[in-house]
Length: 284
Picture (cartoon, helix red, strand yellow):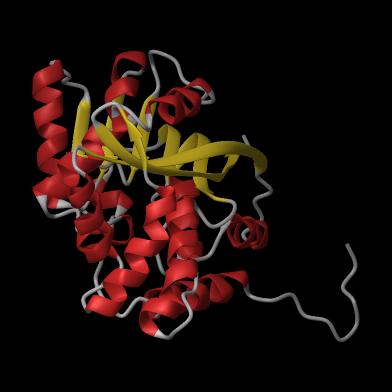
């Protein structure tokens, strides 16, 4: 390609940072349901990973180039959503996970399932020093729905550097169901716009500017919220959307009412969106 006179490519890493910052600033509160240091949140996520995420996990693993000799690096491993079902299929897994609740649950799951080939490093990926923290290069590096780093270029470059085979990234191609709820509700609840975080289009362009041209696939993504009682569901979303005043709660309750359905003994809210899989094989 020849440069166009007077035209400069945008810095997509800066675009990612700006979108992340605007996304973080638009909430004005910490979502307690995403505090992964808390065991109850990790247990809720873990329960979901064995039901609502089951199809996604199977689809993800089926699309990986792995064998019984593979060394795998799982970034943002959570309670072992991917690592646990992967463990019998590969030689070893290094799981990177900073959340205390998630790490504790991962070890509990490993003990329960008698899995011994997963090693967990309790750190953020941004804080990992490959020379000090990691043991050589990996055949497969995975970051599934864990790309929340501020400097995504640096994080991606480090993923590429520690791989000797494949890198697989899974990130949102469009605003997922729960983010669309924020977009709908933030103005009526708080009088301000809600800004979604950066998506796979930005991620692709950061990779391109790193000299990496990834393969891209679009996959279905379904999210479900399941509760044993309607009042439990309402309480969860009131906390998530910071609906504290009577007016805010009325607005939220009216929004949720047509979305709630009964399935057996559970109250369910769900929605669909699209997941982007970006992957490449290291040259040489």
